[in-house]
Image (cartoon, rainbow, N blue to C red):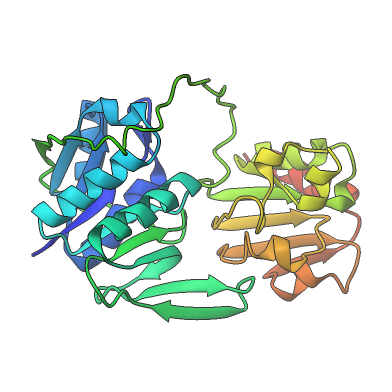
Length: 313
């Protein structure tokens, strides 16, 4: 069975959930092989093995001293050396660039923002704000596929997790852009927006005080998101914007408070499993795609919901 390379996203030795989702998808196609830059911790290796990684290829940590090019060279080398069936990465801005560069080096095709993939390497996309589902397949070379976080449920399945060190000699071009400094962002108590199972987002209807959104999110153990209107008004940081020009999320539950649901916003959350909207406008576009809706004042509805959730904990 051919190997399916999975680029591992990890922070401080902790594997990100999206990698476990990619390993689950890889098992549909072939034999999952995790690709880790740096020395993996025992905990990381155990988690990768728990979700089906038959092999774990480790590359020198120095690849992280540069921008995206070295990882593309690494994936292309492994894909050629191991005759890989496919290369899977998470659909983050950085990894989508890595995917594109890898595909060019392999002379193959790349598929981005994929929400599902089957054993025949036919990928599913949700486009035009989720109003259309399309299917695509790479017809030449090793397919390189960038999958949206939370699009494919992670399912454990034990793998051998045999570790193999990989040596790679980087080209001068790959070393042209070096990272000279890193500033570690303080991690808050809430989950990361793109990986969260539950997201509570606020829009123009929330107003300047986002505490009503944050309180509900904290009650649910959710991440906080915001519409473009809210971040443009300076009510919440741009890093939390959900939408076509912000972040794309696919949580199990998406709660939209005071968000009209313009196509720009819907493009970033349409693939959520369950959508709940609270809006005083019964004609708001968000209601067209909502599974549940409350027509009312969010400043009355959301606090009641938060109170009820806290009671039931």
